[in-house]
Amino acid sequence: MEYRPLRVFIEVVRQGSFTKAARALHSTQSTVSKSVQLLEEQIGARLLHRVGQKNLLTAIGEVVFRRGTTLLIERDDLLAEVADVQGIRQGVLRLGLPPIGSHILFAPVFAAYRRKFPAITVELVEHGSDRLEQALRTGEVDLAGLLLPVSKEFDFIEVQHEPLTVLLPRGHRLAGAKEIGIGELREDAFILFDDSFAIHHLIVAACRREKFEPSIVATSNQIDFVVELVGTGLGISFLPLSIARSRKRANVRCIPLRQQDAAWHMAMAWRKSGYLSHAALAWLKLAGGQEDADGTPSSPPTPHP
Image (cartoon, rainbow, N blue to C red):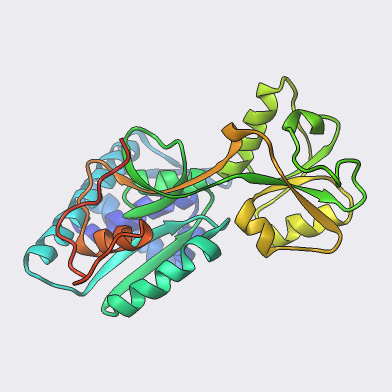
């Protein structure tokens, strides 16, 4: 079996359509369709059947998707390990980062990484935490920035731990407070990042611990848009402290959130069963603030217990 048609098929399933898969693979829809047809010929069975506007997996397609995902992960791990044994410093780091906070936490790391390892290509994807966790699980990325806690199938190192702040319109009744408990906001309208972001679930869980359901009037995946909506008086929102400071607006107040169990706790995670290449280890050393004098890490960083 050829790997290329299998990878294309898996991307079609992940994206939910041939068009989106072609865009993700930087290919054409015709090429993607031919690759899936080739795989079906190799397998000797239909893998997808069309129902309305959706492409659904057949029973055999489900087996090929599940087994094929594992096969590609093992193949990528094998190639990375062989390259490391051969001492090859060119390589690829597939890195998943969240849109929230990456410009502060990871942009300096990215720049330092490129200076130290110019021959390594970094393939960067940006998603909310839920999508990143799935990408890490299926081997789409080698490392991912996730909010803690993470699944037990992953190891991780801590990168940042800081409080959340409440974003309030300037004229809000609590705009002069030194800190705010989330229970004091039960009557307010909430503007949250969409539910693919871990911070969404973090806030909703904190509200439920205070015995109320937040009234969500808008969701977005754009930080600046959320801040501007708060400034219009539509509602309140939440950001990590460092990000809130970088998005100051005259019509928005940023007040520390009192809840310690609703802190922004960022980590870099990887699959426990996966192989960490030199490229991945080097990123982890830089992201974790460890010294790396020769640029050739020889062992994984110690994961958090």
